[in-house]
Length: 306
Image 1 (spheres, rainbow, N blue to C red):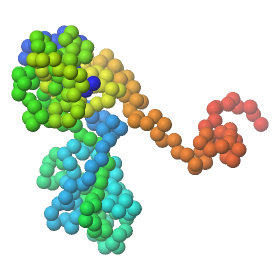
Image 2: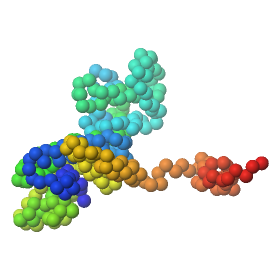
Image 3: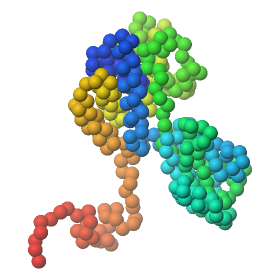
Image 4: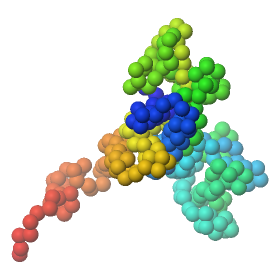
């Protein structure tokens, strides 16, 4: 299943009793847009982790400055072409200091990220010092968190339902197929979709569209299953706020759903366990002792005196 902006609007219509009037849809669209932005930026989500090669260096920078892709939210790390050179992040102030020094070729690569002066919505990665020249066929890589584009197509606009949006005009959007007599709704709707696909992604079709099926296109939500509930609760908070209602109740539910999403945001539940460094219980108790003998990972005990 692909989550789509259509699902947020349908949820709000069901929860607040909204109708098809344009004024109501303006509020629902705004609530969905703001809730999606808040959720994407409230945490460094593992779900949004990605990697990509750096584009060509900015002209005239001696291969030391790069305009990052448009979907980069935050940079986790820089990987050098030889994969062995030490790499260290520094602040923009530290970059300015090191850039004024003459570092030996092949020394550690120091890098920072600043807003790009030529593209207001992009970041620029800057390398300090004297990095080793890049060999032909190799490049720098970055690991980063994605920044999804703002929602635009909610699935209820005429252009979303007349069949004109395709992989060229709306790449990455979700196209859902209904039946010959009904437009598709979300999975909880009275007329749920019969099939769906991501426009522009080969092999993404799920299900079999019936002949002459009506379609709905809406932006795909870049969220995991654990994040989706928090997104819906956030939309309720924004809707209550814009309607001038008390937001305390909706905010309490939203905070609870956020905590649950935070706890579930892990691609590998066992990730983080370090082995072979003298930490119980990864090593044997004979060599390193029990947790009580070592003094950590030990349950609290009552004070027994001297």
